[in-house]
Image 1 (spheres, rainbow, N blue to C red):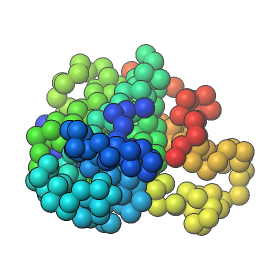
Image 2: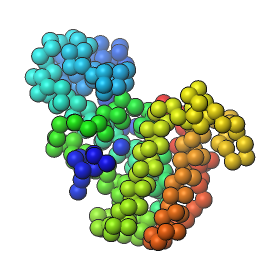
Image 3: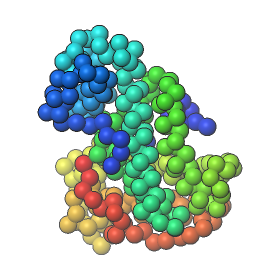
Image 4: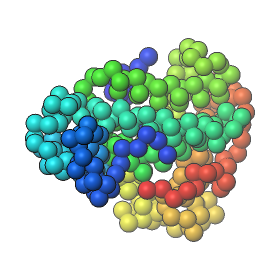
Amino acid sequence: MGLSSRFLQPPCMPTISKTSATLHASRQSYHHGDLRQTLIDATELLLAERGPEGFSLREVARRSGVSAAAPTHHFGGSEGLLAAVATMAFEALLVEMEAGRERGGSDPVARLREQGVGYVRFALRYPGRFKLMFRSGLRPDVALSQAAHSAYVALEDSVRALLGKPEGAPLDPTERQAFWAIWSVVHGFAHLALAGQFDARHGGYGATPVGADQPDASLPWDQSMLVEVLPAMLEQQLAAWVQHGGSEPLTKTAPSGATTSAGERVG
């Protein structure tokens, strides 16, 4: 959990994604003072196409219609530019999780479940951004640290609400383990989904014949996993924690995946 120790200490939004046509139009006016945003937009497009491994400062400059030295002038190099994009991504993730919290209403279990769904939905919509955010080697940056910490605390406070603790209250070791377990379920689910492991085309979950205990075959695989499987997994994680001596959650609700707003088309 390297990001927790580096950026998260104590995974719709301020958008940074643009079409190529919009990017072309924006770079025509970069000399009017918006070059910084043009470079961020170009980085976002490049990450979506090639992932963090395919990032090139020279390619960003080329797409922005500026010299290779321009990104360095504005961001101090590739590390500064990637840190700026990652900061905006964490801000966007926080917006998605807060929306999930609102969907959950007054039930702390439902709020935590919907936040988890929002977390994964963000990853599926913005895979390049998501992989960048949790990449080791990002340059330490105050704005990035604050944005990442805010997203971390939003999820942590939902666990506190489940336990009947006020926001910001310390978690004891057992409660901290529960938080990490819940985060691991959500974050791991996101990475498996991005790797296509739930898709029949990759021999994953979708290849399993749909039966009485399987997701709705009428839904696309990404929707069925978000609507039915992930909420149930989070419920099971909470139940297992209680069974092994954790604090009893304030409320227990059956998975409501069939009616959750996370059933919107993802991607």
